[in-house]
Length: 152
Image (tube, rainbow, N blue to C red; front, side, top):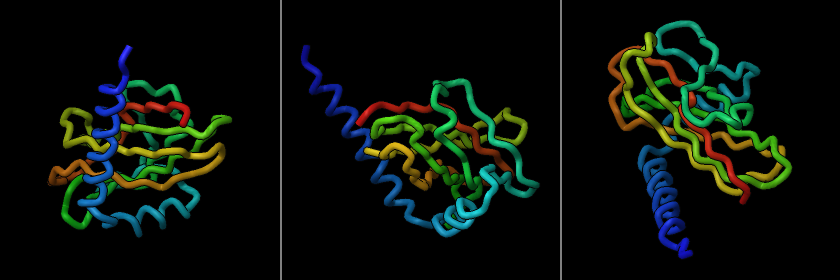
């Protein structure tokens, strides 16, 4: 069975996700690091008090590994989020995570962001940023929509 098309597609997906992250830049990096340094692993809802993290209906088998640490527009005005990924497994792991950005009532999806982490060692953390590349025209919340973790 030839698996190279699958690996090629996955590689292109990861390169695309990394390219999007590079284009967006580090505009929420400072805020993400400040929030990650604080002891409150909660997403921030624009224009209101901090809210507990919520999870979508996708694959959330490894939800203990993912914490949304910031949920605020980036400097370009796009809906964005910061995420801390911690590898709680016994082996180095790769992650692909979907972050949902939606209206506070959950009725409107503003956009989604992807987080990709490669070769995260056991016990190691990675602070990542993602953007929906969609304008944040009002308050929104961030939720984890899907988590894929596999051994490196």
